[in-house]
Length: 348
Ligand SMILES: Nc1ncnc2c1ncn2[C@@H]1O[C@H](COP(=O)(O)OP(=O)(O)OP(=O)(O)O)[C@@H](O)[C@H]1O
Image 1 (tube, helix red, strand yellow):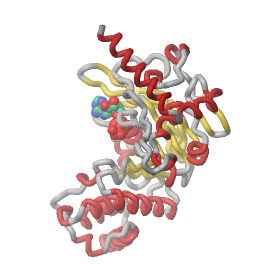
Image 2 (cartoon, protein in one colour; image 1 turned 120 degrees about the vertical axis):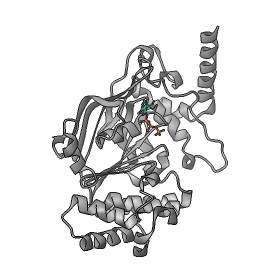
Image 3 (tube, rainbow, N blue to C red; image 1 turned 60 degrees about the vertical axis):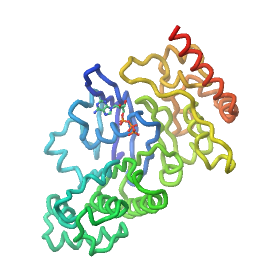
Image 4 (tube, rainbow, N blue to C red; image 1 turned 180 degrees about the vertical axis):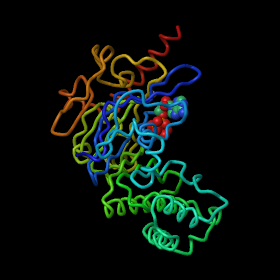
Protein backbone atom coordinates (compact mmCIF):
# COMPACT_ATOMS: atom_id res chain seq x y z
CA UNK A 1 0.00 0.00 0.00
CA UNK A 2 1.24 3.48 -0.88
CA UNK A 3 1.87 5.84 2.04
CA UNK A 4 -0.05 8.62 0.30
CA UNK A 5 -2.45 8.11 -2.56
CA UNK A 6 -3.86 11.32 -4.00
CA UNK A 7 -6.84 10.45 -6.18
CA UNK A 8 -8.48 12.85 -8.64
CA UNK A 9 -8.14 15.83 -6.34
CA UNK A 10 -9.50 19.24 -7.35
CA UNK A 11 -9.12 22.33 -5.19
CA UNK A 12 -10.77 25.71 -5.61
CA UNK A 13 -10.69 29.14 -4.02
CA UNK A 14 -13.73 31.36 -3.75
CA UNK A 15 -12.79 34.95 -4.48
CA UNK A 16 -14.66 38.23 -4.97
CA UNK A 17 -14.30 37.76 -8.71
CA UNK A 18 -15.51 34.16 -8.81
CA UNK A 19 -14.17 30.66 -8.30
CA UNK A 20 -10.53 29.94 -9.08
CA UNK A 21 -9.75 26.32 -9.87
CA UNK A 22 -6.21 26.07 -8.52
CA UNK A 23 -5.82 22.28 -8.85
CA UNK A 24 -7.83 20.04 -11.15
CA UNK A 25 -8.06 16.28 -11.16
CA UNK A 26 -4.58 15.57 -9.83
CA UNK A 27 -3.57 12.00 -8.92
CA UNK A 28 -0.27 10.61 -7.69
CA UNK A 29 0.98 8.24 -5.04
CA UNK A 30 3.97 8.13 -2.80
CA UNK A 31 5.61 4.98 -1.45
CA UNK A 32 7.27 4.69 1.96
CA UNK A 33 10.71 6.34 1.77
CA UNK A 34 10.08 7.80 -1.70
CA UNK A 35 10.79 11.44 -2.47
CA UNK A 36 8.81 13.30 -5.08
CA UNK A 37 9.72 16.68 -6.52
CA UNK A 38 6.74 18.85 -7.42
CA UNK A 39 7.80 21.46 -9.96
CA UNK A 40 6.27 24.13 -12.14
CA UNK A 41 6.09 27.88 -12.56
CA UNK A 42 4.66 30.17 -9.92
CA UNK A 43 0.89 29.82 -9.57
CA UNK A 44 0.57 26.29 -10.98
CA UNK A 45 -0.89 24.96 -7.73
CA UNK A 46 2.08 23.36 -5.96
CA UNK A 47 1.58 25.06 -2.59
CA UNK A 48 -2.18 24.63 -2.77
CA UNK A 49 -1.75 20.89 -3.25
CA UNK A 50 0.81 20.65 -0.43
CA UNK A 51 -1.31 22.63 2.00
CA UNK A 52 -4.35 20.54 1.21
CA UNK A 53 -2.51 17.37 2.31
CA UNK A 54 -2.03 19.06 5.71
CA UNK A 55 -5.59 20.44 5.46
CA UNK A 56 -4.10 23.89 5.91
CA UNK A 57 -5.81 25.65 3.02
CA UNK A 58 -6.87 29.22 3.66
CA UNK A 59 -10.54 29.75 4.61
CA UNK A 60 -11.65 30.47 1.05
CA UNK A 61 -10.04 27.27 -0.25
CA UNK A 62 -11.64 23.83 -0.38
CA UNK A 63 -10.98 20.37 -1.75
CA UNK A 64 -13.94 20.13 -4.10
CA UNK A 65 -13.30 16.61 -5.34
CA UNK A 66 -11.16 13.56 -4.74
CA UNK A 67 -9.54 11.59 -1.97
CA UNK A 68 -6.17 11.72 -0.23
CA UNK A 69 -5.53 8.32 1.27
CA UNK A 70 -2.81 8.43 3.93
CA UNK A 71 -1.95 5.02 5.41
CA UNK A 72 -5.26 3.84 3.99
CA UNK A 73 -7.41 6.60 5.51
CA UNK A 74 -8.89 9.57 3.68
CA UNK A 75 -7.42 12.87 4.92
CA UNK A 76 -10.19 14.81 3.17
CA UNK A 77 -12.96 13.48 5.41
CA UNK A 78 -11.05 13.53 8.71
CA UNK A 79 -12.24 15.85 11.47
CA UNK A 80 -10.14 18.88 12.43
CA UNK A 81 -9.20 17.12 15.68
CA UNK A 82 -8.02 13.98 13.86
CA UNK A 83 -5.97 16.05 11.43
CA UNK A 84 -4.35 18.02 14.25
CA UNK A 85 -3.12 14.76 15.74
CA UNK A 86 -1.52 13.76 12.45
CA UNK A 87 0.27 17.07 11.91
CA UNK A 88 3.89 17.04 13.02
CA UNK A 89 3.68 13.47 14.29
CA UNK A 90 2.82 11.85 10.95
CA UNK A 91 2.90 14.64 8.38
CA UNK A 92 5.21 17.60 8.85
CA UNK A 93 5.55 20.64 6.65
CA UNK A 94 8.46 23.01 6.24
CA UNK A 95 6.76 25.97 4.60
CA UNK A 96 8.05 28.71 2.32
CA UNK A 97 7.74 31.39 4.96
CA UNK A 98 8.78 29.08 7.77
CA UNK A 99 11.10 31.60 9.35
CA UNK A 100 8.16 33.69 10.45
CA UNK A 101 6.66 30.63 12.10
CA UNK A 102 8.84 31.00 15.19
CA UNK A 103 7.29 32.83 18.12
CA UNK A 104 9.53 35.82 18.98
CA UNK A 105 8.73 35.82 22.69
CA UNK A 106 9.84 32.25 23.50
CA UNK A 107 13.23 30.63 23.13
CA UNK A 108 13.51 28.27 20.21
CA UNK A 109 14.18 25.43 22.65
CA UNK A 110 10.98 26.07 24.60
CA UNK A 111 8.96 26.01 21.39
CA UNK A 112 10.57 22.78 20.24
CA UNK A 113 10.21 21.06 23.62
CA UNK A 114 6.57 22.12 23.91
CA UNK A 115 5.86 20.76 20.42
CA UNK A 116 7.38 17.41 21.39
CA UNK A 117 5.42 17.26 24.64
CA UNK A 118 2.08 18.04 22.99
CA UNK A 119 2.45 15.04 20.68
CA UNK A 120 4.16 12.51 22.96
CA UNK A 121 4.12 11.49 26.60
CA UNK A 122 7.78 12.42 27.05
CA UNK A 123 8.83 14.23 30.24
CA UNK A 124 10.34 17.71 29.82
CA UNK A 125 13.82 16.26 30.32
CA UNK A 126 13.27 13.56 27.69
CA UNK A 127 11.84 16.15 25.29
CA UNK A 128 14.89 18.35 25.90
CA UNK A 129 17.20 15.46 25.07
CA UNK A 130 15.27 14.80 21.86
CA UNK A 131 15.45 18.52 21.00
CA UNK A 132 19.24 18.48 21.45
CA UNK A 133 19.44 15.38 19.26
CA UNK A 134 17.47 16.92 16.37
CA UNK A 135 19.36 20.20 16.69
CA UNK A 136 22.58 18.24 16.20
CA UNK A 137 21.05 16.47 13.19
CA UNK A 138 20.49 19.80 11.44
CA UNK A 139 23.89 21.20 12.47
CA UNK A 140 22.86 23.42 15.38
CA UNK A 141 24.66 23.44 18.72
CA UNK A 142 22.66 22.48 21.81
CA UNK A 143 23.26 25.92 23.35
CA UNK A 144 21.14 27.41 20.57
CA UNK A 145 18.04 25.99 22.30
CA UNK A 146 18.36 28.95 24.68
CA UNK A 147 18.29 31.50 21.85
CA UNK A 148 15.34 33.68 20.93
CA UNK A 149 14.54 33.79 17.21
CA UNK A 150 15.98 37.33 16.82
CA UNK A 151 19.33 36.07 18.13
CA UNK A 152 19.68 33.63 15.23
CA UNK A 153 20.65 34.15 11.58
CA UNK A 154 18.20 33.27 8.80
CA UNK A 155 20.02 29.99 8.13
CA UNK A 156 19.92 29.02 11.82
CA UNK A 157 16.23 29.82 12.09
CA UNK A 158 15.48 27.70 9.04
CA UNK A 159 17.51 24.84 10.52
CA UNK A 160 15.52 25.17 13.76
CA UNK A 161 12.26 25.00 11.78
CA UNK A 162 13.47 21.91 9.97
CA UNK A 163 14.48 20.36 13.31
CA UNK A 164 10.94 21.00 14.56
CA UNK A 165 9.43 19.36 11.50
CA UNK A 166 11.62 16.28 11.81
CA UNK A 167 11.60 15.87 15.54
CA UNK A 168 8.89 13.21 15.75
CA UNK A 169 10.15 11.17 12.79
CA UNK A 170 7.12 11.95 10.59
CA UNK A 171 6.19 9.44 7.88
CA UNK A 172 5.73 12.27 5.39
CA UNK A 173 7.68 15.51 5.08
CA UNK A 174 6.33 18.26 2.86
CA UNK A 175 9.05 20.77 2.10
CA UNK A 176 7.71 23.82 0.24
CA UNK A 177 10.69 25.74 -1.15
CA UNK A 178 12.31 25.14 2.24
CA UNK A 179 15.43 27.15 1.57
CA UNK A 180 14.50 29.87 -0.95
CA UNK A 181 14.97 32.72 1.51
CA UNK A 182 18.61 31.76 2.10
CA UNK A 183 21.78 32.28 0.11
CA UNK A 184 22.64 29.61 -2.44
CA UNK A 185 25.49 27.91 -0.56
CA UNK A 186 23.47 27.66 2.67
CA UNK A 187 20.44 26.48 0.65
CA UNK A 188 22.34 23.58 -0.78
CA UNK A 189 23.86 22.54 2.53
CA UNK A 190 20.54 22.62 4.38
CA UNK A 191 18.73 20.76 1.63
CA UNK A 192 21.34 18.02 1.66
CA UNK A 193 20.88 17.71 5.42
CA UNK A 194 17.11 17.42 5.07
CA UNK A 195 17.54 14.65 2.51
CA UNK A 196 20.06 12.85 4.71
CA UNK A 197 17.69 12.89 7.66
CA UNK A 198 14.73 11.92 5.49
CA UNK A 199 16.66 8.85 4.30
CA UNK A 200 17.80 8.03 7.82
CA UNK A 201 14.30 8.04 9.29
CA UNK A 202 12.86 6.55 6.07
CA UNK A 203 10.26 9.28 5.65
CA UNK A 204 8.62 10.01 2.34
CA UNK A 205 9.00 13.51 1.03
CA UNK A 206 7.22 15.94 -1.26
CA UNK A 207 9.71 18.62 -2.23
CA UNK A 208 8.21 21.68 -3.87
CA UNK A 209 10.43 23.86 -5.96
CA UNK A 210 10.47 25.84 -9.18
CA UNK A 211 14.09 24.80 -9.72
CA UNK A 212 14.13 21.44 -11.49
CA UNK A 213 17.88 21.04 -10.99
CA UNK A 214 17.24 20.62 -7.25
CA UNK A 215 14.89 17.73 -8.00
CA UNK A 216 17.40 15.98 -10.23
CA UNK A 217 19.80 15.79 -7.31
CA UNK A 218 17.40 14.91 -4.54
CA UNK A 219 14.24 13.09 -5.64
CA UNK A 220 13.40 9.73 -7.16
CA UNK A 221 10.25 10.95 -8.88
CA UNK A 222 9.27 14.22 -10.50
CA UNK A 223 5.81 15.65 -11.09
CA UNK A 224 5.56 18.62 -13.43
CA UNK A 225 2.50 20.80 -12.89
CA UNK A 226 1.11 23.48 -15.17
CA UNK A 227 -2.04 25.54 -14.71
CA UNK A 228 -3.33 23.30 -11.90
CA UNK A 229 -2.79 20.01 -13.70
CA UNK A 230 -0.10 17.34 -13.89
CA UNK A 231 1.64 17.53 -17.27
CA UNK A 232 4.28 14.85 -16.73
CA UNK A 233 5.22 12.34 -14.07
CA UNK A 234 8.29 10.12 -14.25
CA UNK A 235 11.32 8.84 -12.42
CA UNK A 236 13.84 11.69 -12.29
CA UNK A 237 16.27 9.50 -14.20
CA UNK A 238 13.84 9.03 -17.10
CA UNK A 239 12.73 12.65 -16.96
CA UNK A 240 16.19 14.13 -17.19
CA UNK A 241 17.28 11.82 -19.99
CA UNK A 242 14.03 11.62 -21.97
CA UNK A 243 11.45 14.26 -21.05
CA UNK A 244 8.24 13.96 -23.07
CA UNK A 245 5.80 16.85 -22.55
CA UNK A 246 6.47 20.04 -24.55
CA UNK A 247 6.24 22.07 -21.32
CA UNK A 248 8.92 19.85 -19.75
CA UNK A 249 11.06 20.29 -22.85
CA UNK A 250 10.75 24.04 -22.41
CA UNK A 251 11.56 23.82 -18.70
CA UNK A 252 14.61 21.71 -19.46
CA UNK A 253 15.93 24.43 -21.75
CA UNK A 254 15.87 26.80 -18.83
CA UNK A 255 17.95 24.32 -16.83
CA UNK A 256 21.58 25.55 -16.91
CA UNK A 257 23.57 22.32 -16.68
CA UNK A 258 22.54 21.00 -20.09
CA UNK A 259 23.92 24.12 -21.72
CA UNK A 260 27.42 25.31 -22.31
CA UNK A 261 28.52 27.75 -19.66
CA UNK A 262 27.92 31.28 -20.89
CA UNK A 263 25.26 30.30 -23.39
CA UNK A 264 22.04 32.22 -23.03
CA UNK A 265 19.19 30.01 -21.77
CA UNK A 266 15.98 29.68 -23.75
CA UNK A 267 12.89 30.57 -21.77
CA UNK A 268 9.27 29.67 -22.59
CA UNK A 269 7.56 32.79 -23.97
CA UNK A 270 4.19 33.86 -22.55
CA UNK A 271 2.62 33.20 -19.17
CA UNK A 272 0.49 30.51 -17.50
CA UNK A 273 -3.30 30.51 -17.98
CA UNK A 274 -5.66 32.55 -15.85
CA UNK A 275 -7.30 29.95 -13.63
CA UNK A 276 -10.33 32.17 -13.02
CA UNK A 277 -11.33 31.45 -16.61
CA UNK A 278 -12.83 28.20 -17.84
CA UNK A 279 -10.09 26.15 -19.45
CA UNK A 280 -10.69 24.66 -22.87
CA UNK A 281 -8.27 22.28 -24.55
CA UNK A 282 -4.71 21.77 -23.36
CA UNK A 283 -3.62 24.27 -20.73
CA UNK A 284 -0.23 24.70 -22.35
CA UNK A 285 -1.66 25.42 -25.80
CA UNK A 286 -0.98 29.17 -25.74
CA UNK A 287 2.76 28.62 -25.28
CA UNK A 288 3.26 25.30 -27.02
CA UNK A 289 5.31 25.29 -30.23
CA UNK A 290 3.73 22.03 -31.37
CA UNK A 291 0.00 22.63 -30.86
CA UNK A 292 -2.56 21.51 -33.40
CA UNK A 293 -6.31 21.86 -33.63
CA UNK A 294 -7.13 19.11 -31.15
CA UNK A 295 -5.01 20.89 -28.50
CA UNK A 296 -7.30 23.94 -28.80
CA UNK A 297 -10.42 21.89 -28.15
CA UNK A 298 -9.72 18.82 -26.04
CA UNK A 299 -7.95 18.40 -22.76
CA UNK A 300 -5.31 15.68 -23.18
CA UNK A 301 -5.41 12.79 -20.70
CA UNK A 302 -2.34 11.75 -18.71
CA UNK A 303 -1.08 8.77 -20.73
CA UNK A 304 1.53 6.18 -19.83
CA UNK A 305 4.25 6.61 -22.48
CA UNK A 306 6.72 4.15 -20.92
CA UNK A 307 6.50 2.09 -17.72
CA UNK A 308 5.68 4.55 -14.94
CA UNK A 309 6.24 7.54 -17.20
CA UNK A 310 3.14 9.66 -17.86
CA UNK A 311 2.59 12.67 -20.10
CA UNK A 312 -0.55 14.70 -20.81
CA UNK A 313 -0.07 15.62 -24.46
CA UNK A 314 -2.17 14.75 -27.51
CA UNK A 315 1.04 14.23 -29.45
CA UNK A 316 3.13 12.07 -27.13
CA UNK A 317 4.10 9.87 -30.07
CA UNK A 318 5.90 12.73 -31.79
CA UNK A 319 8.24 13.32 -28.90
CA UNK A 320 11.45 12.53 -30.83
CA UNK A 321 10.78 15.41 -33.23
CA UNK A 322 9.67 17.68 -30.37
CA UNK A 323 12.87 16.97 -28.46
CA UNK A 324 14.98 17.97 -31.40
CA UNK A 325 13.01 21.08 -32.29
CA UNK A 326 12.67 22.29 -28.73
CA UNK A 327 16.46 22.66 -28.55
CA UNK A 328 16.35 25.33 -31.24
CA UNK A 329 15.96 28.96 -30.28
CA UNK A 330 13.83 29.74 -33.34
CA UNK A 331 11.19 27.20 -32.24
CA UNK A 332 10.43 29.33 -29.18
CA UNK A 333 10.94 32.59 -31.06
CA UNK A 334 8.05 31.56 -33.32
CA UNK A 335 5.89 31.04 -30.23
CA UNK A 336 6.82 34.53 -29.04
CA UNK A 337 5.81 36.00 -32.42
CA UNK A 338 2.57 34.03 -32.40
CA UNK A 339 1.68 35.31 -28.93
CA UNK A 340 2.37 38.92 -29.96
CA UNK A 341 0.27 38.44 -33.09
CA UNK A 342 -2.63 37.02 -31.04
CA UNK A 343 -2.51 39.93 -28.60
CA UNK A 344 -2.56 42.40 -31.52
CA UNK A 345 -5.53 40.62 -33.03
CA UNK A 346 -7.43 40.62 -29.69
CA UNK A 347 -6.81 44.34 -29.21
CA UNK A 348 -7.93 45.37 -32.70
N1 LIG B 1 -6.03 32.12 -0.75
C1 LIG B 1 -6.17 32.21 -2.06
N2 LIG B 1 -7.25 32.81 -2.61
C2 LIG B 1 -7.42 32.89 -3.95
N3 LIG B 1 -6.54 32.39 -4.84
C3 LIG B 1 -5.46 31.78 -4.36
C4 LIG B 1 -5.20 31.66 -2.96
N4 LIG B 1 -4.01 31.00 -2.79
C5 LIG B 1 -3.55 30.72 -4.04
N5 LIG B 1 -4.40 31.17 -4.98
C6 LIG B 1 -4.29 31.03 -6.45
O1 LIG B 1 -4.23 29.64 -6.73
C7 LIG B 1 -3.34 29.38 -7.79
C8 LIG B 1 -2.28 28.40 -7.33
O2 LIG B 1 -1.46 29.04 -6.37
P1 LIG B 1 -0.28 28.28 -5.57
O3 LIG B 1 0.25 29.22 -4.55
O4 LIG B 1 -0.79 26.98 -5.11
O5 LIG B 1 0.78 28.06 -6.72
P2 LIG B 1 2.32 27.68 -6.60
O6 LIG B 1 2.61 26.83 -7.77
O7 LIG B 1 2.61 27.11 -5.26
O8 LIG B 1 3.02 29.08 -6.76
P3 LIG B 1 4.34 29.63 -6.00
O9 LIG B 1 5.50 28.86 -6.58
O10 LIG B 1 4.34 31.08 -6.40
O11 LIG B 1 4.11 29.42 -4.56
C9 LIG B 1 -2.78 30.74 -8.23
O12 LIG B 1 -3.54 31.21 -9.31
C10 LIG B 1 -3.00 31.60 -7.00
O13 LIG B 1 -3.15 32.96 -7.36
